[in-house]
Length: 520
Ligand code: 9PG
Image 1 (cartoon, rainbow, N blue to C red):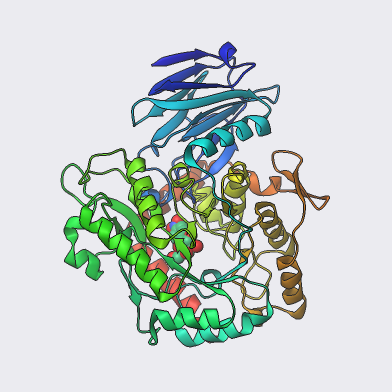
Image 2: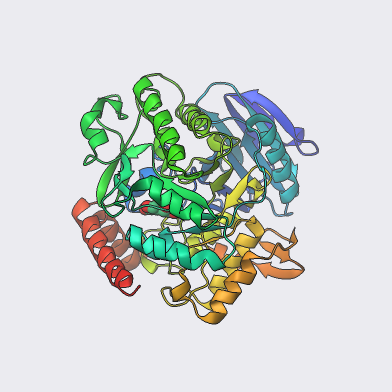
């Protein structure tokens, strides 16, 4: 254990090589910056005390780092920062993968699972110490920011998985009037999770779908989740030996979605490697050159692999492989991705959870203490706390909404989200022209055409072309539930771990979706 005294970094930042390291702080911090593991995991400044464990537990593999979720001291992946009464911040950050930072009273500790690594530490103004850290990360991981981020229309937040060929063709034609560079087909086109071929809703196949998009003068984008599969897939049926298992030989859970348990591929298996390379080449051959690869965390779960390597290093290797196979000219967006291991290998990264038609659900925020679950406030909160990543790559805050027909966000909430995307310089929407009023439609058009000057004026305060925007209202966390409310939360959380309960929720969601789809 390498020990560092605060006085050693008080005036100058430092890089130290160590596996485990501890910094003695001058006093107990007033706030602590927790940095969640992957895109959807919470990143936030909180008080420096333990927080409740989010519920339901069945979602842990897909929302947090399972290896640290029960650690009661404030902690985060790769970095942590402590703010003191004078407003100065001490940041401790790994310059390598497979590392965690934990606060214990007056001790800030770094823990590496990959032996000796470089640790960066600095004390001073928040923006300055984060900028210094980012610079060092860029040197080691690489930066990619070829051009402006493309303006994207994505199918997910309007139609969800209820997409099909006729509906998309119609929408692609209607969108020709708006300035998008990419039309991206999201979840719903594939045979199964693991079987990445067109399903029967796309009878003309994937080449035809990409052709249709390109015929409207746009680049074709496609969503896929190459590192997971469900047991119903042919992939799982044909190759159970390709999937990640634990020390006792049981399949490692990659969480639960689509009403089914998810499993993770072991990307160190040579046959999996060839399969992934072939898949990336296939998608490019179909004609798609904007790839949104999702549920990527599955490649970095703990387990017993064909080749024994630290789990995040394994994941980074799999990204390198997929990047190379898709070619440097493809636009590569990572989603549900562990943050540090993906730097330098993708063009853009989702840096928060999904937005949603609701601002915040009482159940998720108060009863479940879950800030990784889809919801617009959750998305804004984590994204504003990850803006420091912007010099390294394009940061995707998820889509913005203009329409008011199919969502319950207020005008102010929608505006806040739109402003955040301006700060990120990443513009995407799923809005359908027929759901927008004439005003909303024109508003969207002018939004897509603006490129404002951005200046940061405080932790959560920005000037957008001189206009002051404050995101603080989205960042606060609710009081932790007490008494009856806590009991009720525990009960619902317990229920939420049952597959049949989640399947009932899925049935209800599907019903709402069918109604919405019918109104098209
Ligand atoms: C498609 C979607 C969209 C979306 C992705 C991802 O925590 N969760 O339970 C959870 C489920 C789904 C999810 C995110 C979080 O959405 O972020 O843009 O592509 O998959 O299924």
